[in-house]
Amino acid sequence: MATNYIKRVAVVGAGGNSGKYIAEALLKTGKHAVTAITRADSKSVLPDGVEVKKVDYGSRTSLADAVRGHDALVITMGTMAPPDTQSTLLQAAADVSVPWVLPNEWSPDSANEALLKDVFPFQKMPKAREEIEKLGKSSYIAVSTGFWYEWSLAVSASYGFDFVKREVTLFDDGETKTNTTTWPQVGRAVAALLSLPIKPEGEDKERCLERFKNGHVYVSSFTISQKDILESVLRVTETSIDDWKVSMEPSDERYINGIKAMKSGDRMGFARMMYSRVFYPDDSGNFEKTKGTINELLGLPKEDIDEATKAAIKRSKETSWGG
Image (tube, rainbow, N blue to C red):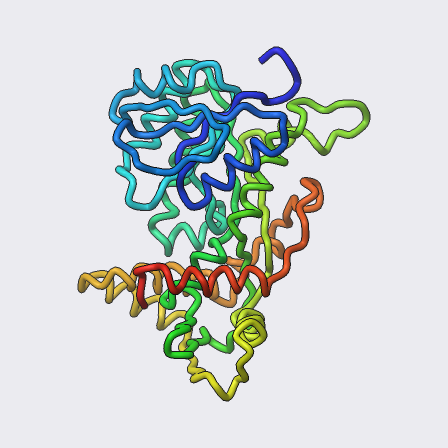
């Protein structure tokens, strides 16, 4: 790396939900060349301006050739991706000494031990971080975003809103706050983060990547409760509370019932288990309170929750996920 800044960024999943926004935001800075790492048979629509590298995700050599010469590797993959894919990517990045890796996090706080214990999909995240350190060729920055707002509100099993039936299930009293982030904000956060100098410049010791080396950063759009979301939904839909059926369910019972549903083959049980856990009244979902965010350091904008709610309601009409 000839300069004190990251120039070339490889993005895995650049045609996906968050990856698309990350790639577009990186390109928008005018400071980065972006390479989309994609399967040879992928039909994903990729952002204009990216270089495309077709790979065999089962081949470490293929992946190493694709990420060679890049300053950073950003990994965004769905929960259904083969479990060894990220490990192979990390090994390939180490083979060609990619200096920085943003592993596949984009989630609530995977450094929270209580969440790790109760939400098994999060348990692979510290393992990936440990693997990067063990390989010893790359440094990582784990980006925690909370759940994605547009995705989560659109799926009734997640945040508890059914827009067709006009029903909402509040967990406990509906007042527990959690962090959630929109896809555009995820993109802006990554672009701003990878635009920081690598080492401190001048007297500013805070705004550099070295400060976050092999650690977590936390970014967010909103720190909100279900009742906050409900208020936004009422404004956006121009309805009143009387137009909705509101019920309550203890968050711990919803978690347990979600696990039972999973075991019986109900895929929505997975969402109910995972989402109810971040609404426990232990602040496990509120990393702004427990850890703080770097929103201000990155210059991230304050967003309009009603605009994000509109996007989520639109998505709810397009998704096949039920609840």
